[in-house]
Length: 224
Image (cartoon, rainbow, N blue to C red; front, side, top):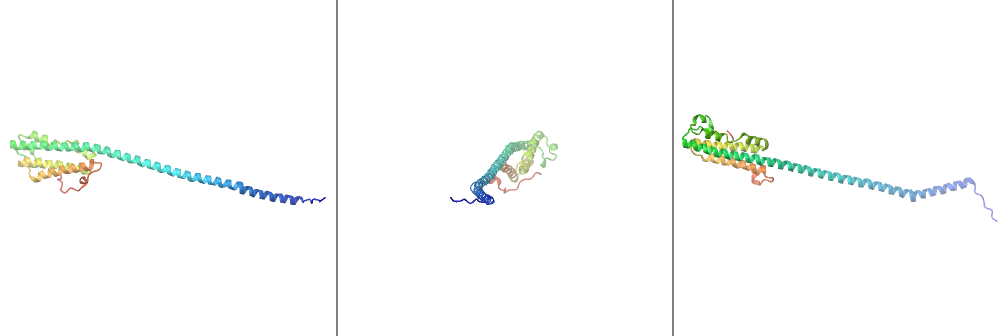
């Protein structure tokens, strides 16, 4: 019978400790490490995915805000354009009425042989039969027509409006004083009215034509 040699206790414990360490490394290599890799990968994926989602959401919010801002600007432009249409049309109607009444006054002066001073200075003192016609003509342009232009119209529209008023006055003065209208005054009136029409085309059209934006080839009459 073979006698089994008894291993000393400290050697057995050292061997058990080595086996335990070996088993622990195997456990960490086969279980712990893969698990940690999976957790880190999942965490990184969540962070990247969350960042992409946040960026996409921010882009969508900014695009929506830009669209809303554009819509508000378009609504504001439409509102201004609608108001200007009324204001410009009202002024042009008043200017046409002023011209018609001015022609009636001039006809009265010629027919009644009244004396009329150019520039309206002292005109009522010299007129004997056409005072009423003169007052009707000279007050035919309501202040609100030009006031509204000053408030809602463009600077160019306001300048052209006063030019048109001056063109009408020059036209009527010439007719009442000389009994006829000279070519230059007629051209002046035509140019001033065409100038205001050009401003209307530019200010009131959502997409103005090229000729509305072109620089006029004639000089505008200025109010005296």
